[in-house]
Length: 317
Image (cartoon, rainbow, N blue to C red):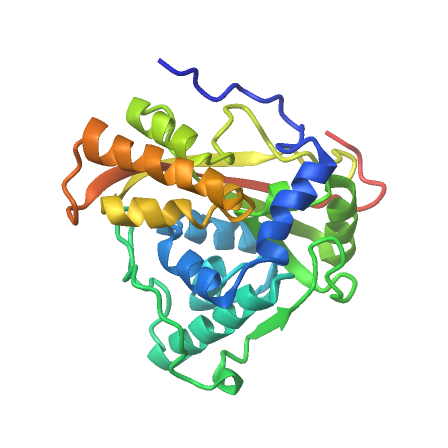
């Protein structure tokens, strides 16, 4: 039996080697094609509705207005962006990949036309939108939601105004950032008592067959019990963490495609990809004997960390 992911101490970076972090992150920021960005948006899991509601409620408890201003760092193709817009927020989507932001704009335009947002809309954990990638928006880019501003920039240098945001959130992205620089930028753009949130979906490796799947797919961002994002307690309150387990219906073919959206795949050469395809074919078709085209329940867990920015000079509790 392969070993489970080892617990990582709280307040330690998930990717400790800066060069490795830059190399893998560049697989998204610099190297993603438009086709790959559409595939990413179609295949990556959505977030449980209850945690998204909790995120917005936390903003309200910290004194944010009914229409909070949210900076989303590493917004990608806008999977979370669309849900934030659906809940009435004004969103600054910060993303360094041009291909990702093109899909973000197009999908947000789709949602603006549908008017009945995200709950992509009404989805609960285990429910997924159509997983067939599309390549053209239904509306011209100029028709995107007026509450959305897209910034082709990094999390460490957003270009946003000082004290302009009620909430700063990173979904499926915090591990790509430089810890010191991103904290400095978050402190700069957050208003006093603003909320920092880190949200992530993980394949549930407590389930043996899923753990082996993550090893074959080389899914590195697995859940580490007890881990919290590294932040300076002089500037941010202790993390409050909520964990939700759920299942996603997905076919064996879609599992294969999901593997092609990982940074480990995007940064691999063709020989490594061929080995991974072969191993995954054996595992899904022979070892697990999954039926082609038939959905299987794939266990996930989703974690939401929230912290409140401290006013300068306030005591650290």
